[in-house]
Length: 600
Image (cartoon, rainbow, N blue to C red; front, side, top):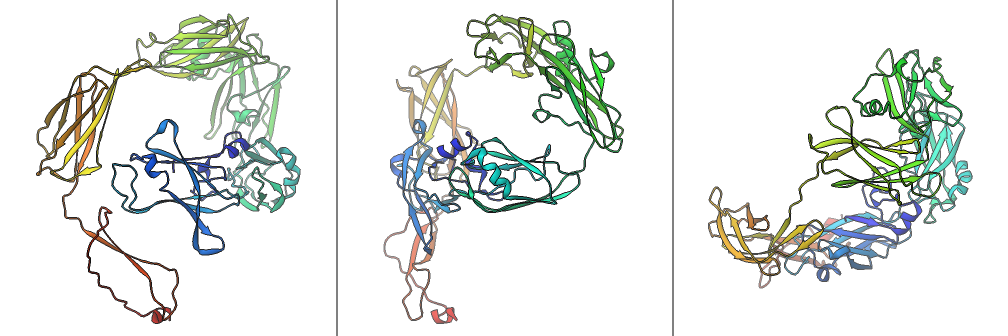
C-alpha cells in the first residue's frame, strides 16, 4: 500500500488528515475511512487487465470468527496509466476499528510477461478509527496540551463546552479549551513546573467527530519539566516575532529562576538604506556580536526571581515599517541567548517563487486586495561570510510581478545566500534568507531499457528493448535513427562483448542477446547502452542453474474436527519458483496420533 486517500477526512481536517497516522500511538497500520481510495504500488510492472480483479480484501466475520468476509472493491488505473500502480475503492464499513487484510494470492501473475507469485502477498490495514485522543505532546508546551482530532468535531467550537465537562485534571487545575485548527484541540492551563498531572477523558456519547462517532475515554499522565531561565515568547511560539509589537507599545517577557541570569536587554533598529547591509549581516549571523548600547534603542527588562516579567516600551523611531530586533542574555550557568528577528509592521506582502534560472517576486497589499505596481525589488547575495552585495534591481509591473534573472550571479561560488528587499513609498519589506544553488545543466537526452524477465539461467536468451528521446527545455522529440551499441560482460573479470543495432524512426530499439552456458551465475551483469543521443543501463541477474527443488505444503480444509470423522487435507506440490508440479505423483502419508488422542 503506497497511499490511502479520503476526501471526507481531508475536508474535515482542512487537508491535514493522513492515513499513516494510525489509530493510536503504537499502531503502524494505515487508516482507511469508508470512502477511501487505496493506491497500491509495485516495483514490478502490473498489467491493469491482469491484476485489476486479482486482489482480495477481507476481514473477520463478526458473526463467526472462524470465517472471513470478502469486501467488494472497484479498481481503477492511476494517473497517467502508471504501470507500477493501481487504485482500489473498497466498500468498507462505517464501524470503527475493523482490521482488513489486502491479499495478492500465490500463483497469480502481475503482468502478461511475469511469472506467478511465489507466495501470498498480504498487507494489513485498519478501517475507520474510533474517536479517541492520541496525545500529540507528552508534556505541555507554552501551557498548552495538544489533542489531535483525527476527523474533526461535527459541531466544531460549539462542542467545546460539553467536551470540557468530560475532562478531569488531577491534581485539580482550572483550564480552558480552544480549537485553533479543525484537526487540533488545545487544553490551556497554568501547569506548575515539576508536577505530575493525570488528565482523564470520559466516554461522551453526545460528543461526535466528523464521521458521527462518539468520543471514547482515555487518559495521559505526565510530569512538567523544571522551570528554566528562558524568555517566554508571546506570539507565534517565538518563531517569528520576539516582541509584542502593537501600534502604541512594544513589550518583552522574561523569567529568572534562582537568579541564574543577569538582566537581559532588548534592542531594535529601524531598517533603512543606511543600515541595510549591517542588518543583512546580522540576519545571516555573519555578525554575531550583540548590539548592546550601540543599537539605536535599548531597554533592559525587569528581572525578579522566579516570576514572569513584562516590560513595555515605546516603539523605536523610524518609518520604514521594518525593524531588526534582538534579545540578548548571558546567564551565569549555561544559557546564552541571542535571538534575532525581523519585525514587520507594513502592509507589503511578498511571495517568492525560486526557479532554476530566475526568481519571481509578487508584491501585494496585505490590508486590501490588490497588487503593488512600481515597487523596487532588490536582490542581495552573499557567500562564505562575504559582505552582502546588491546584484539586481527590478520594478514590479501592473500585476505586482518582478522577475530577477539569476543566470549570472554564480560567478565566484556554486551556492549563495540571497535576500529579497522590497521598497515602496518609503516602506521596506524583506524576505527570509534563501539558499540558492547554481542551475544544473540538464541532459539533452534520456534513455530507458527493459528486459523480458526478472532473471535468467546460463544459456538463456535475453530479449531487451528500450527507447531514446531528445529533450530541449520543455520539448521532447524523437531522435533520428542511429547506431546503438549494447555492451555486457557475462563472466567475472572478463572483457565486455558488444552487439550493435539501429534505433527505429520511433526512437526505439530491441535486441536478442544469448547468455553463454558458462556465464557466472548468482551475479547481476550490467548491460550498457551507448548511442549518439544518450546512454543508459540495466541489470541482468543470472540465476543459479540448479535443478528445481520441490516444496510440499499440507493444509487443513476445516478449522475443527470431531472424533471418528474424516479429515480433509489439501496437499500442494510446487517448485521453489512457485510453479505447480502436475502429473502422476505418488504421495505417502500417515497420522502419528489419532484424532481422539490429539483431543485428549
